[in-house]
Length: 533
Image (tube, rainbow, N blue to C red; front, side, top):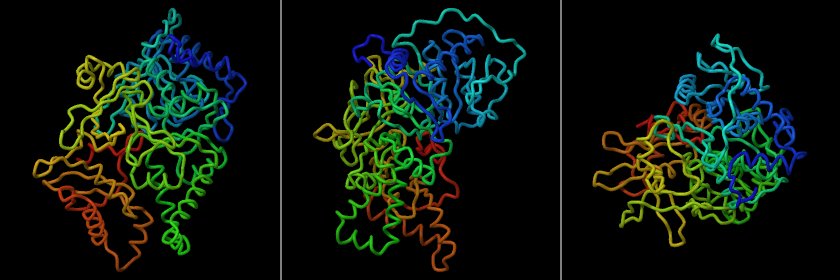
């Protein structure tokens, strides 16, 4: 891919890859299904483009994609976008109500849908085509109108052409349609190349939803641009599935989220706690313990990992310290869907515990409205990665995008002497203390999550007091139920005391409430905070 090319589009990425790596493996399920070389992938893209033409989809029409991760997802995306049409990815975890809203709001004319997701598709008489993404066969339409042919000439695709509308609610609800151009997505590939060089010899394992900008940019577009192969799971990436899969595929690059790293961390800590020998090594030779942990991590991830990217949410500093001391090849990325998605990064071997790094390639980053006492301000970003705006929502667009191109993230951070940024919290979740001080619940939650039996937590303000909502480990709860001496009240008191000894006076929690059900989350496994306020 030519960095100086004036044609900074997905079309140029595809054409370059097909020309250079025709016989190379492009993607497949880990069991061998849907296997493509770059040559066969290109031919399938052409067939699907022609299928959309035959169904009368307008030259710049919207086409939704509702499916789990698979090679055919990439086929559908490129068949849509390289013809000048607009892809509308829908997260497979969406409800039928959310699917209907997105199809209607985006004005989608067709949809690619997997067999697993087909039942979520309601009555949409405006759809000209329902295409089963598993094999690209067409499903019966809910309208009696015959398919229309002759859609006219395809529009010229430029870097300013709209490529995709990604709907996201983040953690605040009220879904937004983020409009990303070909140029936005092209730049995300350039950012990735500067953060972590890759070649056709690399192997990706895709575990995050392709409908999210994070996986779309760095788990789909980037490997395709360098001629690499991507492997996909048929099952959900639970630890029992993921670890043996990594040993089989031996990936070199994985895009992940903090929750995966945190689960690995807790699993290893549990093994240490259950072994007197390992506890002794940890006490008397911690350097040896971290060496052993590093060997274990490398083995569990297949032995070839050179880049384990962590993004989508803030990583617990204790977990990051654990990864760093174990010499694991992790990297940190920070961004938003609105920035396609990368804003800052801390590359492998250049991480600083707690930091989201420095500005990514080609991106300007600054802090707005900085508090002179704390140095904390709102992260703002400008560059070719910043979205075109929110679909059919000029008021909301104007509220976050200035006339001179600065995007206001809503995230609060401070900066050290070397320019590295440290997230403190969000403007929307910041809690005002009784004396007017700013309290960042995310920082308290990081402390809570280090308690051995805690899986996740959320701190909210209720009746002028801080309350911690906590999900406990199911195995711990089972052991607790069998114990006569332990009571839930004792556990909640222990957690509260544990936390309050480790946070400032204004950040101390008054009560702990145990959750009966797991927290509801976004695509990148961030808790939907607004649901619990």
